[in-house]
Image 1 (cartoon, rainbow, N blue to C red):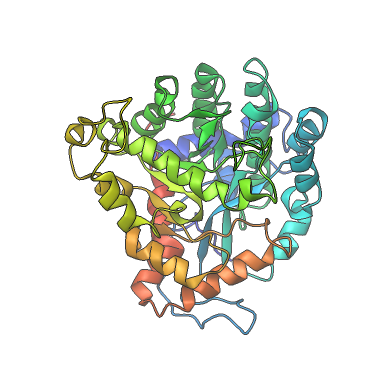
Image 2 (spheres, rainbow, N blue to C red):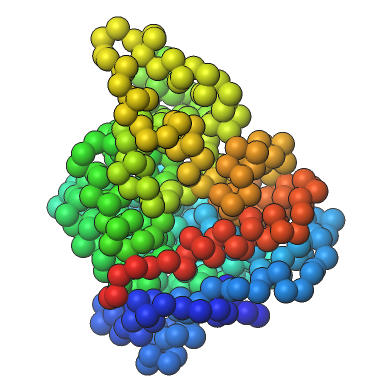
Length: 412
């Protein structure tokens, strides 16, 4: 089976990172049993290239259970999650959120990769770009220790990719966002030496918004130095209440509905703070297809056009005037993934808002009621049910992800 990274051209920076990856893993004591032994072997086990001909041969649609090839012989699942075993043990020992520890420990396909591979055998055309599951390093440890957790997480994901390159051809690096200087160094290490294809951040940093000046260097370094995209994952704990009279959010509203709101709020802060004017090449992949925004685009456009009309204690009159283009154009610069629980109507809404060039196939595996297969199966079904052209489906399944994953600027 061809991997998504063993066809097509590759840049010198990518090859430089590949050639050292096995040595770095071995020196760190990570994945010694499976790390590549030399540069030639490394190229076959790491991030070698991206497919240019994923649409070369048509394939049948999914079977009665939503499995099979659909319209593309390769489907790049760009947003799913793992918890490397060493990181899992740290979470169990140190993370104070007992509910989240319970959740992660009970989902085998997050941390047992043999089980995960067996799951993916049902979907031979699917290859997964790995991201770290919640909690991120900054939620587990303080700024002096979170960089070590990020390194452990990233080494673990790199090891998984080295061991199973056909199913996990790439990963996205975790960042210790409560220590920005250390996060910059870890970004360099993970991209230059481990071969990470981007970074993941949360929609807030322990309750602090992403447009605070302290966090701008992360956006800038990822964009201007490395040229990699940023995966932005929602984060909102139960302590963020739904009603002022209560001490916590009940019925898990904080996650089910709170996370899409978090994504939308973070997008708005990035837009109105002018970050996208300062970094026009910044690319951010949003989980759950942009949260609430595609569904409420009409409301957003008409009410934010009156920004400041409802506020007396701050002056917003210069915000829209200070942007270089209409504010809704910035929201369409984001990418939305197809993680919508299999809802075709929600996906149609996301496609109408972002356009087919900015929607990417993803599953959120294994956070579904079946422990992994449901969101893959139903995600494919939702795409296939929309009667999209082969050209549009190829963009969603492969080509948009290909463009996001293949760009690395810096010579390592």
